[in-house]
Image (cartoon, rainbow over all chains, first blue to last red; front, side, top):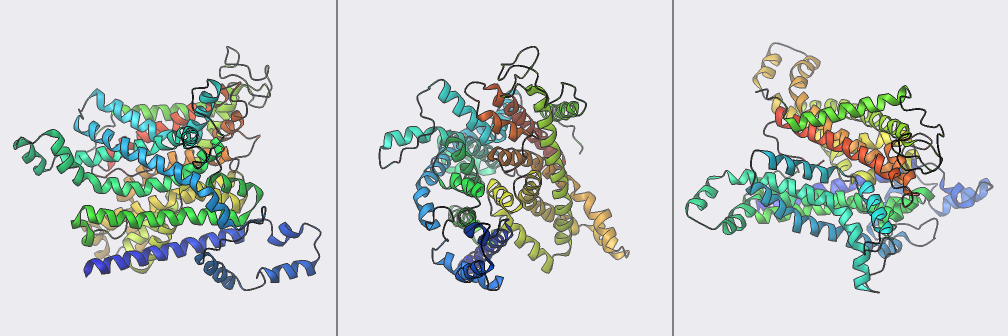
Length: 323
Length: 273
């Protein structure tokens, strides 16, 4: 019962945040330079034409009504129409979703599959001298290299020296899965360096925290194998901060994907939004930003759910909000 | 209690100071005029131009010096603004609690829901590309985490005996907050400030790289890397030079921040920047 109550509270709070996000984005788009009428009709439109257009698009109504119309339309899946292509934004985003999703999923997978073992390894073998400093510097380097620097370097290296992976030239997975993977490995690698390093650092901290617990000492005293201790005692108890980090990392990756898609010229949502800002195609910017924020908020709810399942102690008493 | 910074963090601080000196060098044209055409186009690094020349034949060294200056100045200004706003709202919300606390937390939560560079792009779309957009982006991106942590620290400090003593002895609100709470959350502000600085540098770089931040002819590290991208195959030094400086700057700040955190907040858990 308490759990259900806590969950409904969590859901309500997320909904409130999402509402705040939508208000902020709506306000931001209203403040963008270049009036809608001028953009559509050009500089020589008569006042009558402008008034007619404003009436057609509901721009003569109070701001609150406009927001309400927009919100109900978005809730129904209508994200507006691109001013450039005159296509519904939702269709355009949907067409580009696979690229961004593939990029993000590959990176999150790399972060978990490589970052967690690296973090455990460095924590279990941590010595207070030399090696630790090198490890700290390396993982520090990983979280310090921005995607656009790493991406530019990768584009240079791989296009100059033909190292086997194609740069640019995206191939949809439905056309040729092997070629698709070849074109996605490099962008995904660039995007995931930060995620892997951040995951490794967090895992290391979490594991170091668990290592000093009495039940680990007890397990060692009982003569359990290191593998058993790590998988059964340490990982399970160190999981919460790592899983929580996954949500933050997803948000980070969604932003990073925007840059990486731009660098590698991939036809994803990120590069589409960057293009749209340049063309002042505000409906697209609005939808893209809203999508990114919504995904992040939903991820956070899912992560709370997962952490609660992994560690029942946290479920009810847990900080309902991220610290 | 006051442990000295470890060697790595001292190295980070030294590196950072060296970069500041490097940037200051451009204000007196130590390595020449950043806009002067001094040699052939796209010449590789050599004795006359240590970092090579760009597509117009300008020496890259003074351009990178100017770029570091622009980037550091923008990021530092933004972080100072963030620190001021976060300290004010974080402390007030943490001390007062109640209605104000709820409002601050809500606003912070909303801002926190945007991925950094996505928020920066939105800000650039509203304000129009330029330095001001970069500045505003950094402030908005760094405010949520700092406000949240300052508030959390202020909640703890507000329950201490010395604050209660100050209240009992009749101190007014500004005095309590300024003399008793602020000095005791200053450590958190300093640590988060260094992390915010590294986030700021990377946001400025990313935004300028996309073409929405600092605008040429003014150089910033992001602008230089963007411009270098077009000639990258023939002249990789155009991105390797500024790219290395950018990474060194962020790494130095992060490492210094880690040391500062270990010293000022020994038990804090690591936060993702």
